[in-house]
Image 1 (spheres, helix red, strand yellow):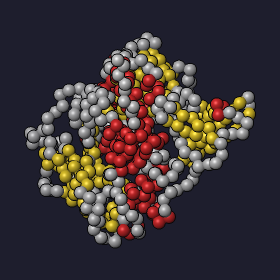
Image 2 (cartoon, rainbow, N blue to C red):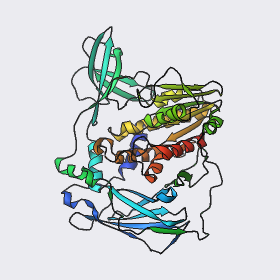
Image 3 (cartoon, rainbow, N blue to C red):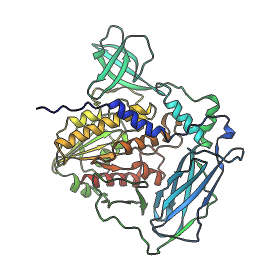
Image 4 (cartoon, helix red, strand yellow):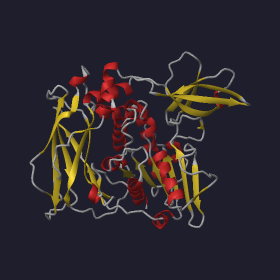
Length: 495
């Protein structure tokens, strides 16, 4: 007797994750800029302040929010970024925000290093709750802040048309649907060309804003990322012999990642829950990757990995690609080390891609399909990320893609349970980025989606969001030691 498999309701799963995220969004109405949260007027104090603290304790900082008129706020939902850091020691850790939903917050910092040079507290009001509500509304009440344009080409006859995940048009359209993954996008059909002639794609800046005119003052640069902890004294941390239990196991797939998930010390990342191997030299990576096939699937933050391998430590060489740096960054890349039997490929995660020049997109299969096409095995490593190119589109699209990736990973583990899969979350980016399209609040909600979707799966979870907040890395491509530690954690899980 053949057992029937119950149909999977993808839309129901998407709605469930979306509802969990939406419950975190403040439901507040903007009335006037002066009634919004003011980082300058808000007050920060240390709970149970002491002259010195012990390694292993938590430092708790209270934040009480006030508006621009000096009135006490009575509701929460502000988007706060916080870190405790010591430049002299190359040390930093993110703070965990506890929102009491009444205008007050506790920020919890785990104290993990001795610091006689005194540690600094940074608590930034990235967006007031009124701005958070506006960002959420604008993201989900439009077709996306960026548009897309497709190029159709047949025997030299070329036509460009509008494309997207939704099109508000009465013209004939071409539907590009993947039935199995329930993914689809559309283009206006050009005259005298078939839908099969679609060849290239690019992003188009629609130069629109869905914020109400009175809300736009919330997003001027001086109101984004306002430091609130300037008045706090530096913190002295001593060794009181009450150390928290040290992790005694190597970081392995399937481990649950807390928040904060780790801390920097001497510019090296120390996970709170496991031991990370430090990868610095070419020999370090060769020991991990010898005899392996490494598939990097995602955006340019994973392209950094293959660039590091080919252009910095030079353990592999590009195959049929002779450029360096970020030229032709949209291209699929392959690199080889024939002597050590190492194969590395980098491929994009599939439409959408935020490129303002036409690129050949037919090779951009969805990540889930790329996974389904591989047999896997103990010589196969996948590192997967996505996020930056989805920030300008409604969150349900991102959730759909994440769930499809998780399901493809689960199928991979059924046929090849010894395959290694690493999920790298997206990272923070430039603080001057246009917040309605690229802003880190959108990245944070997508980070929460990845934590939710991949909870309980046998993957290595690289919390690049936590690492870049702790390091205060405000660039879409993390540099230097931040990237080195993101890669070290990735390949600790892989090897």
